[in-house]
Length: 519
Image (tube, helix red, strand yellow):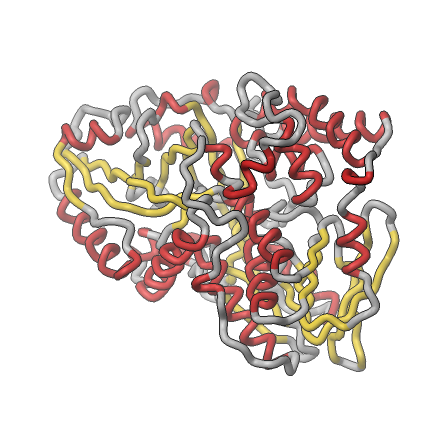
């Protein structure tokens, strides 16, 4: 490697293990952990974030790609959650316009009562958004509904309702928060799993982590430790209290990705009531269509959850009632599953009924655990966590700055879809070698983007690059597997790895990609 291409991890690792006491140690590099770390850093606290795998490896890269208030929660009567989420949606639209944009949704009406019934509810949705509304809902006749969503089933269609919500790229927002954290003096390290908590008497004063590249163990100390590990928060809590009662009820959500021809316009479809009482979305995203989701209680918290056949069939069957042509298993380019970290009350028998509000608990030793919530409210969750952390860690109490904080790369420039997510970094990426060479004929991504992600976004593996820095795995799992050899070559070149390491990367990624394809 040249001097300019030295492994950037060395700098982050050296900063992470510096002989100091951090104000805040955050465990977990998903939406909540990154949001909490950015909140703390922008308030002037020293912050270290440790992620056991890669940023947004879990739930935070597997969403429906919506920044939304949650129409379904309004139907459940959770007005306060919807109001908060709509407020946060508006802030995120302003603070990251390169990642979040307005999206029109059509709710098709096939019954005479559907338009007035859903129309009234969506007007309430508009009102709750207040000054941060993205636009007013309105009734559509049949012709107008088909003009917005031409592949709706025409037979029996009476019309529809048009409303507005937000859309984003989840793992790119996570990487943007990582860069924002670093811009404000914070330090983050991936592939650094926490394997134990440090105590002074009963008080939690830090953690032990393993640096995965070398296997070396390191101890880090902090005035306050935040456990933001999503569905895995109970694993960290048991490091302090082995017999602590679990607080998370994981729920699996599955999505399938199909070609753009199934929804060729720029509007999404929202099916307001499926057989299991959920809503189903068909959403245009990166020149493809994401359809989902499900809500299935699961007993285990796997890092690679797999869609059940019945979940895939449910999605395709439901979509087929409303879309013409109906997508089939052969049309699915990728299928992915994520686990929601739901905080389950004792009397909740059904995960669909569990609130999506976030929960913060502080242990006897001062460990702050936060879980629940959703991507849309990540900033508010971080604000609440750090306000609590300042008290627990006896830190200076300072005002939040994040409601108006422009995130890294902030830009309102119009760029082609896959370049826009980089914001102002796009021009710099396009100066790197390989900017004119795409990875695969069926994918939009270039070799330059991989080099950028390795040098500046802490990408360490082929999976990091193809699943989360780019979205190749979700857009076309087969094509991404075919791009793995060249991806591994670039990684090995940038990081100074040998042929055996490169071959291992290809094998591991291609095995992973099989799980995102339907048999």
